[in-house]
Image (cartoon, rainbow, N blue to C red; front, side, top):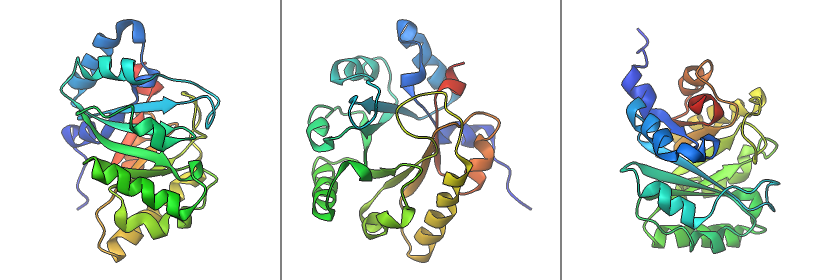
Length: 214
């Protein structure tokens, strides 16, 4: 018999994106996250260059983390992730994820992976919907997390691109075949209607933004 996803298991797989919250009542919004039973806050940092939007910087990130005991995962949607990493070295940030598309060479990617490991953080790579998932194969044994974008990054409230979910199967099969332990995270267009089906496909963590806070 297939094991049903319990509410507690479901809550712990959700990483609410604080970018979609109401920053005028940020403490109340964070309490919603805690009361629901989530364990991770998702921090979307955007530079207005790699993506056309700008979100928030180190000061606001520090303020957010100071009013919660939850851990955070940092999603760098920026053109120079190495520079930004140095600005976000907060204790509660456990995962740092950068975009494959932000770097120009294999050497640069491995160097950034090693930099994140040296500061004792879990390392993740994210890929846009149009990026072939096979392009990250050579890095998978070094990763703790792969973030599959199911919308074009940069804005909240977009509709999920269904074809992007094929990547979940690919990654789940690859890690089982090669005995790897990286987590699969999915971000974009996820709501409480489609979240459980995405988890059942093999996603370990799902990012929910607008749908969570609304």
